[in-house]
Amino acid sequence: MTGPELHDLARRLFPICRSITGEGVRQTIRVLQEFLAIECKSVPSGTKVFDWVVPSEWNVSEAWLADSSGARIVDFADHNLHLLQYSEPFRGMVSRAELENHLHSLPDQPGLIPYRTSYYRQAWGFCLSEQQKKTLSDSTYQVQIATSLSPGVLNYGEYFVQGRSSEEILISTHICHPSLANDNLSGILVALNAALHFTRNPAHYSIRFVFVPGTIGAITWLATNQEKWAAIKHGLVLTGVGAGEKFHYKQSRAENAVVDRVSELTIRESGHPFTILPFSPYGYDERQYNSPGVALSVGCLMRTPHGSYPEYHTSADNLEFLQAGALDDSSALLIQILANLSANRVYQNLSPFGEPQLGKRGLYATNPDENMAFLWVLNLSDGSHSLLDIATRSQMPFGQIQIAAERLLEANLLKCVG
Ligand code: ZN
Image 1 (cartoon, rainbow, N blue to C red):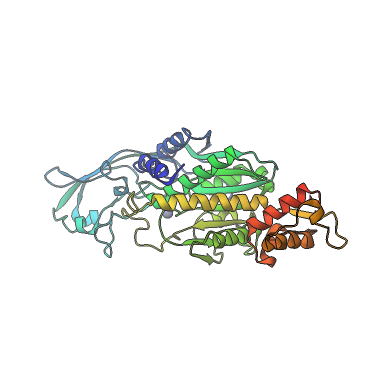
Image 2: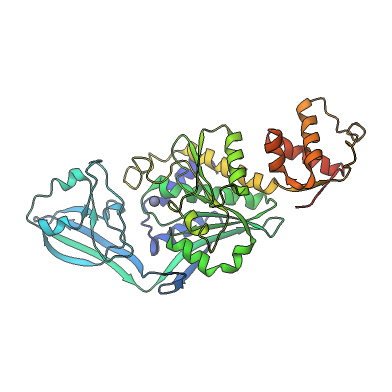
């Protein structure tokens, strides 16, 4: 899909009130199922998942705040950021002073509505702009929060692309934010695009895409899919890829894992400006995948790191902030990283005694770079260097090293050993 097509899809997904559980996640997965046969998995509330428990399911029928004249001045129907996520049901008249404890605004960004959650502490509340909050001068207000918090399920989406190998790459993106575009619709859209690409063009690795609610969803996936861990060789969390000039790649806990090296090389070769961030145990779901008992090599591909831009977790992270061009570039980059991971094989030179004679095999090229690529691949293909090692050491483009290896393979000068 092109950037503008992805942006159109964002327009459909944007108004849905997603949370860590509830109808919004199911509705989002149903829209994605129009494009791909993503499975919608359900894990019942109360299920123990490592140190956590799957929470009650939260759904909203209506939520509004009315002034003393009965006029609805803050209404979930107008913007789903207006309701504190996981608000418990409440109905009644409250004083302005009491209401103060339940209002969330951003004094430093007075025109914006903040995104706030209270998943694990029972509360109710409204989010509104500081400008609007300042106009609330009545002595009492009517609160109507018709939500339900009851046993249900936590849903996540999963889609598997079979590659030539049973070894896998994991791509994880969160699916729990309501009307926020860059965080997190962009990750969902770019993951969908890569899944479409590799469904049509399978590569060496199988690729498992998971669309999980942040934190509890990733932990639930890990706890209920432990048999899948062993096949996962590399992974990426994808988030904040729909806005911002620059790419940011956050390394895995191992810091120098193959996924870290391939991602950095691919971003560098793409010509985009970028920054490499060291691992830290905060941020997105990479912290779950890199926890010491799980220890998967999972990096995080972003343009905008969490908390680093003024639109983050506010009503300004909207469809105007989301850029079709960024969705396009991010899709191309993710697809290239996955393709390079797949192409990063280890070969053995089958004619290692002196240089093999390239000319008699029609491989002697007039282009000196092409010749150098053959010589580097032949020299370092001793069964222990990968194409990534060879590209790094030769300082030649990965694609050129890859093409040289393919041609040497066709000429029976190499065999693949890993
Ligand atoms: Zn977020």
